[in-house]
Amino acid sequence: MPLEFPNPSRSFDEARNAVRFIGHDGMFEVPFFIEGDALAATGRRGLETAEAACLAAFDAARHSIHTRARKLYAAGRRTTYTITAADMR
Image 1 (tube, rainbow, N blue to C red):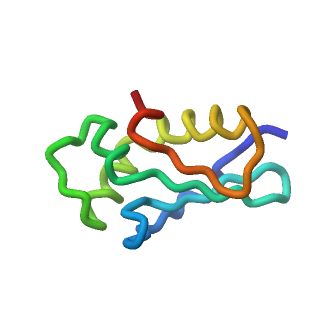
Image 2: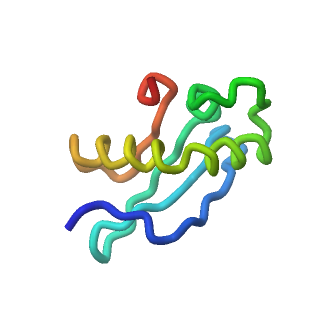
Image 3: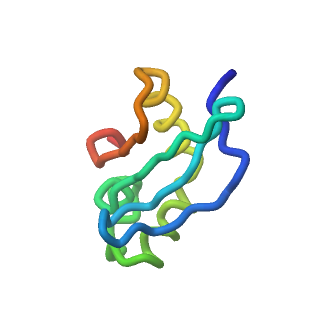
């Protein structure tokens, strides 16, 4: 079953300076994080990496973030995945 993102929820993790979101592979939840620097790499460079800015950048680039998340997931199974700025280039 392919990785899907049926729930649009996301949250800011201040300790990681990242946005957390969940994918689903069948009945399994797959946690993802995308770093604040990676969100700046999505083309929203003028934004600070504060919670509201990161969440807005995530929402604006949701499709490309989900595409990258699927590629990371397909490359190998892990307990969590972190998308970095290098992944978004």
